[in-house]
Length: 340
Image (tube, rainbow, N blue to C red; front, side, top):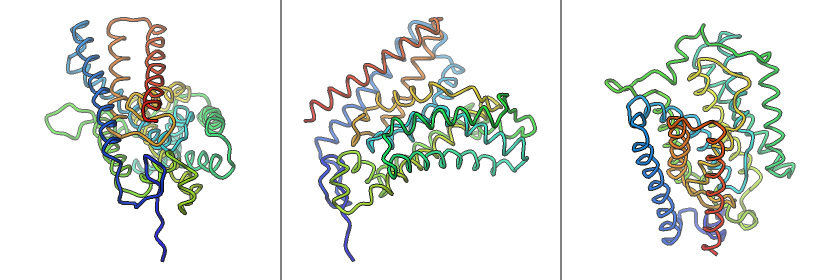
């Protein structure tokens, strides 16, 4: 029985599955994570000095709660971007998953666990469709996921009748995100969920074959295919796995709001992608980390929260977020030049 060799995540050259990244690559990755973490600390210090309301327990809890949705979306997006792809449908896809959760729980009256799983599966099915369009039909990821973004937005409005779906008949659903299972600590369950999701994503990225092939395909897709890997199958699996995180984010968002808002979601994809890039993942694929993504998501949440506390108008908040995205992409370009 022949042994299939995966391409090295950093060079694209076929190598043994057990081989890890080179020392220089690990050092650069650690440095990028350190710089991102230093930026997060700098933002926290700045906003703490600028406003006495920033470091209150309620505000910190609010930041962590806001990070839960963006962070979960960003976790799935990390896999997609490392593989060399992009997914613009995660924002409206999250909304569709929220609406479908509302359909399962409110309209159909299904048990809580069934409705939650149904919402997650909805996201996975969206990812499956995206992956099939990209890997099997060879449609560019930007176009395929842009089309899915519009489809998801339309379906969310059609299925909900353009009206919010409330979970008043399922009171336990709200506790899924806003309740607290940790005795003595007022940490929302949504924060615990993103922690568990991050651990799952990290283990999958570093310890499983789908993680190794994610890096390999993003580093050098042709070399990966020549080494005997079924790139088409693994691309579809990567997008499907990432879609499940979109579904989970949709469930958490619906639980936070105690309703499925069909008009919500547009713009979340940009914040999630920004979080991934700020965390050190390369838009060119082949490099990235889950820890960096979580740090990036926290940076986005702290920035948005701090500007809001300082009473900065919404339009200027958008300008600031846009500037951060541009800076993150530019720094990624510099990193790519230095690594060549």
